[in-house]
Image (cartoon, rainbow, N blue to C red):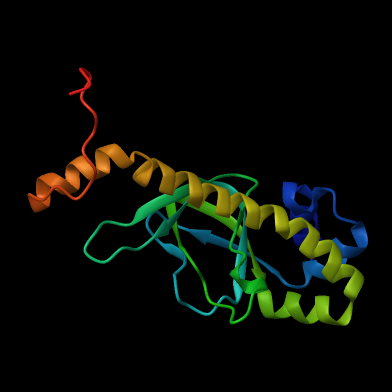
Length: 177
């Protein structure tokens, strides 16, 4: 277990957590390796694990029917993948796909939820760290949506071309007429 405790202490997410918290959490960790294209998480699955990326890149994606997956964010060394394990009904909200070789610590979410329930101080410390991860993911999703939908004029012109209808108010002409 010494190796996992050391890896937890070295990971940026746990670096400023108390030694006591890291010692309690280490029993919930396992070392994992993923190869290019392998799924770490799949949207809709039971959220029973999250990952501490030690090496490599993971694409956080959302599936859209009839379209290629949309990459919301690419995570790298020192980042955390997965926060759905904290929120009932504990279902994964996004896909996580390895981009090249990925080495990660897999954290057993059921184990952690149990330890946090038994030790409110540990739960508070852990949740305090995860709120930042959740905020980062929501910000990334928001920025990605703005990138896609943030140009309403372009979107309206494109939709008019597809439907042949004039569904948006006319833009004023530069000459005022």
